[in-house]
Image 1: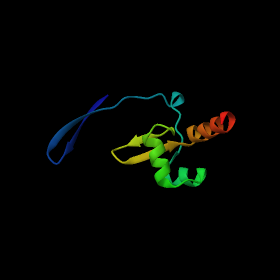
Image 2: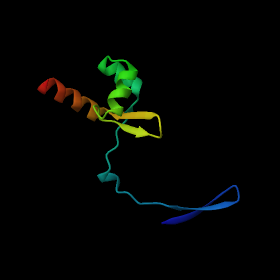
Image 3: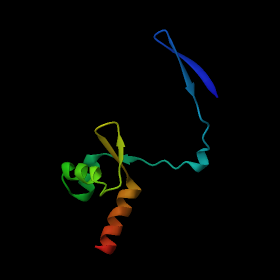
Image 4: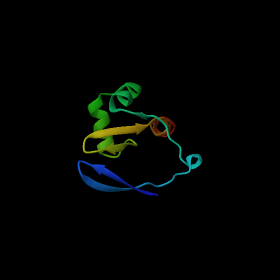
Length: 83
């Protein structure tokens, strides 16, 4: 479905994709501070681990990191199981 939206006199075409809600799983995301608190590490350590790909993460924009709770817990479990 396509709709036109007027923003300050400009017409912007927006394309909407219908998504099946049953196939999409959403979960809350943790911030750097929340992950740092959970893992008892400094926030800068969490940022470094995310930047280096050591910790599962999502980059939002240029400087903001978010973390899926289930992935962080799974990563920690794997670290504990395999050292």
